Length: 465
Image (tube, rainbow, N blue to C red; front, side, top):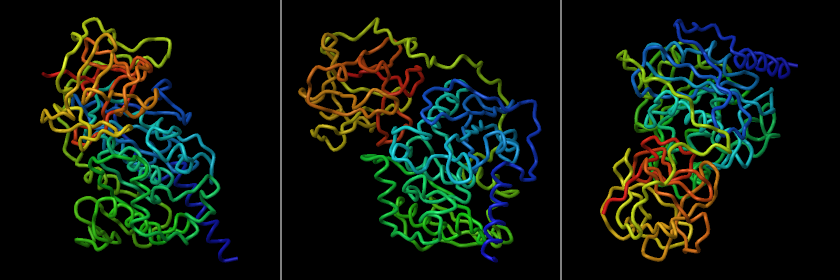
């Protein structure tokens, strides 16, 4: 009987949290929450709401804030402090609404195989599309994109940092679980081995799960802040330690903290270098974030500087999602002459498209890297065959045609997935996919992908002899 009462009490607090009835201050601003119905590729069938503060810089940061099971984006907007903080600091907040049924209602998909690999589909791809919408519609800063969330949203925060480490620069997970904790939907709360208190893997096992989500990725990993209540029985407190194992291993850190302190009464914090912070909230159940915690997360992201009011750039319609409408400005009206040879330099990053380690293996993904002019960065474009060749006998090749498809090198065979248009606006679009070469990051090691053409600087390249 005691165990039943405890479970019911936990369920009550869980549902109270997830439907957004936490007594926190609502944002006070002329700005309002807006639903976006056509934000791009949406395999998860999700809904998107966005909050854009009136006073913001020309290129505001983007925070994705995610609700718990049974909740919604609008409820998390009303029941958390992120929108009021955005008024103060000038960042955009995206509030996704999950539509997948599991556990206590609609939850973010962190269990399907499609969701566990970069560009695989389901909710992660939908969330990526939402970020891309905020970037193209409101000038959001691609180098300042962050994830946070509570319960199922905290789980999805850790999930997105694993699947899209080149997109998200940091995360703050409240009452979450490590990436790949759930084998399938049946393992979701309240049952299953992830949340029944028995989960115990080694740091190496947890770290390998993250590394396997984006094979070949060699760029930086996003820092993470982890929060959990010591009396949480719905998503057991013991899972905080499993998350610590995972992310310290991913960052190559010791399991021993570099510092410990108590920034507020009942908040016990451990720091592992500058990349991982773990907060144990003494006596708290399944009830985070509580007052003041969102601000600490925003400080961890480095967004706690008051915004200087500027005149935001005028918004324009988002890129068309109608597949019958061609992408903007990708007509190759002025292609370079046949035989153009040189480095392919990114306008945003000023780094070159590079074959890692001068590999000649089929399927090696290309990346951004500091320009040095060696053979693994020297490309020749032939406007007749539309091929981009490296080493003289290997071609730039698209491993798929959808958003997020890998771009790699492969033996030249002349099919359309190896044919490219070099367009007058600086984009390079695939003949097969009609999508553009795209990169989410400016860092060394950021991998090149295909994405809907929009002409922003992260899709602009030039051949430099």
